[in-house]
Length: 293
Image (cartoon, rainbow, N blue to C red; front, top):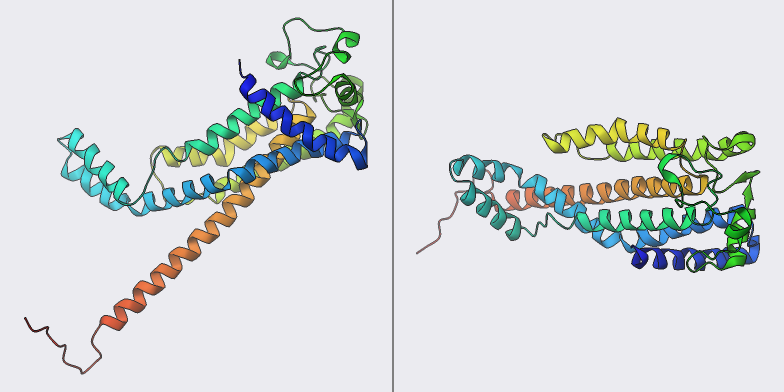
């Protein structure tokens, strides 16, 4: 159903794995883990421009809040006129409410594609928990290792199945690790903690002073989402946790850099406005000159 997502995602992952397999080896767990990290970096780098536009649009929207409140009071009895005036105000200042959905939708599709491709390497159900099974009819280990996975051929599927990092299979989960629990925990717990901390600090970088839905979402991002990352760490494969940790760290760093850039621009604009106002003001003791008509 989502082959238009699965094939491009598997293509990018395949390219990075082939590149990393030269120095590390095709069945090296680090090569696969770094391929996932590189895929995240590739996708997020392509989304930098939309992310910056979204941040600028949100900053402009916050600066327009007093004017929008005034329009709501002025047209409180006419919702249609209120909506039209706010829409015109947004268009005048280049605010797009839909621009912020582009990075979110793209990241959601990439995650779904990557999750599906990664879990399709192991269709035996050996490490699957709850809804995270790769198929309703698990394959035998022999058939699974002889089945291609999108752009990954049979040799690459076998390389993934044989890959280990600190003794942990990449498709293993904490809750289904069994005898390899200690090795899986050595990988999964640090990745989960990194993802949770990065998610929390990303929320802290979000401008405060919001109300309504924005304030609720900020509180959720501060505490509930990191807690969700900790809980999800028990049932998600190690290789998927690498995606979450990398994506969360990128988001945190990007939020910090964009916030610093926008703050610097706002400070520069305020300084320029103050300097312009001072230059236009008459000097003490000098009579202001009136323009002749």
